[in-house]
Image 1 (cartoon, rainbow, N blue to C red):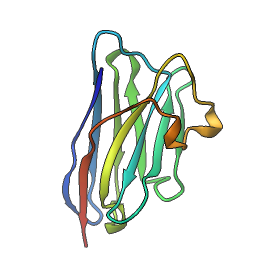
Image 2: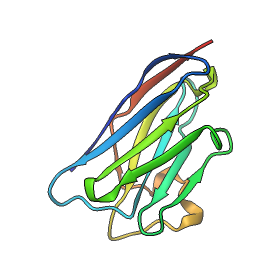
Image 3: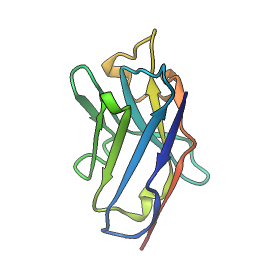
Length: 128
């Protein structure tokens, strides 16, 4: 089972990008998925997460109101619509999945170490 992230690229400040992450493999299932990012010289940080059962979403304060996470559990795909991009959004974006049997509680969706499966990352560069 693998996660494949795509959609990154170079965009000017104020622009938009849509990231996608698709899971492959016949046995894949998840309780939800998340997006994290890592800027050069910085630690990986939480961006957004979605729980399939309740369609609950959670966002980092830095992206709330600008980014939207969505997805299709049946298609094992999650998206991150990024609007009003800023230079400080420049980073490698990673998708991650919360897979059975353990399930991350809602209050801990921002904790990267609790996710079981990670994609390879896609680079987003926002120019000023």
